[in-house]
Image (cartoon, rainbow over all chains, first blue to last red):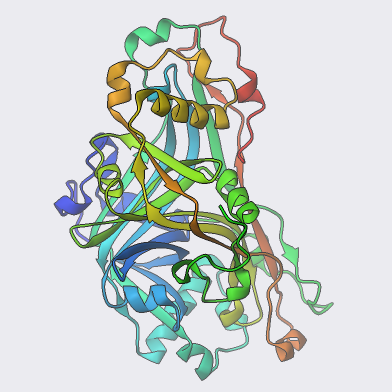
Length: 218
Length: 218
């Protein structure tokens, strides 16, 4: 994507609290790479739907996947979609209710998704998804069958019409309110990974791989 | 809301992996109460948008708020909306790529939002929001001005046409694959609150209140 410093289109320009808007690729990619869970918005029969799913990025495109029978995937393959990633980083407690806020990082991408139809390309994209989270895992797995590949739809959208919105730090109160005896501050929120829980049905001599012991989100 | 055991409408029936669908109020409320961050989907000029914001619940209604100038709030006050909450609980590593999954809890609510216009009612709803997170905080704050109240829109939607979708536990592999020497298991993910960071501009004699020291999400 272009190294935008301004909003690439008016539709993704951050309007409310516009100083929180970021349009450069590095800022947008960093948020996408930090949180695989996303929300895909689409319209079906006039009704907006927001479906949580997993996304991954390759270069200047974002991908998601699922069952070929999924309404979300069938609909977003044909119409305008919105993919949003949001990470809650903290609660911001101010001296007035009005200035309470949250710290967060979010990205919104608008566009039309296209389906990855070539079977080899589809397998390559899924490998990138799995290995992006768990390096080297794809080749250690039982290989995908033709039927599994047919039952899986992979969609892709350019990260082109996109914006990030980020808030960090302490509350910004009205200047006179700083004289009030009210506790203000931040309650940071963290999303973290806990120790692995091996499947009880694992074979006795199967060691925990490095992509599990060393797993980090983002 | 009714104590649905089946989907209240076809639009919110969980189709894919339907055994993960839950329609009873207790299951839906528990997920809404566990995670204040949500994604609001709406359509503007034919384009779906997904905007992260905070939600809170009072009885059988869900609320969200923001600037009265917000496009999301102005649009969702007039058209069909979708409010989705999703919590990532873990990565599920299977013996085939196809059976990899995530553990999660999500809720989707469809409906039309209405604006809380009465000033006293609006203040009462905002108090419930703040005190729901931080018990007793509202009355300790500098009171809201008329201008702040006018600049704030509060929306509400019945939790009526709603469904939850939940996955827990270990991977479900194809039976023959359990014989393969591949590590499988779950990498649990947790959203947690870290120690408070007081605003450096707090007055010296202001103690950290109990609603901060004892804060828990959900």
